[in-house]
Length: 240
Image (cartoon, rainbow, N blue to C red; front, side, top):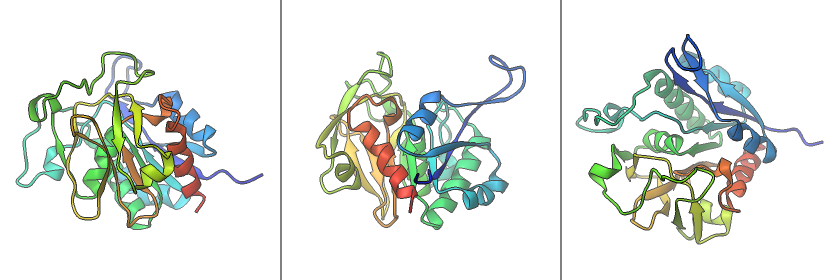
């Protein structure tokens, strides 16, 4: 039986209250089940930036997840912007994810960024962000869809010739949409691989890397039949 590659999944974090009287980590089960279905062996990564290199030494791939967080604009803006009132900062999470993502890219380890994880991957590769779509890129499309995440919110157009196009074999995909931020501009070495009908960037990739792919939607829900192909391609790349 072929050995499953070990995939590290980043966690969301919450302060004390709600589920626990102490600070706690959280991640939906379908992140793990989707990686398992794709042939990977998922493990959760606590937020310890000083251990990022130790984690990566044991891993075959890194999946940066979404969640209730935003990347501090001070990290990606020049001159530094103040956070928008709608921005949710979680410095402990971002510090760890940036350290792990940058280290993974430096060693050309496969990286998949999902939703907020796509934005963080983009920032690690020099991109800038829209802090709050309704203010900076108003649209008739509900990028925070009102219907359940198990259903599509809108479609995206997949750019021909990109890694995403080769993986999915699609020119268009139906996607779920749960974000108030988005990639605004990409720097040298980054390619936009998907856009919403309003032109908003929905996916990025870095062709110079073995596998560095980000999607703004949540393929772990398998809203589109091509979604599992994204996880499958990522896990296959992690077999290295």
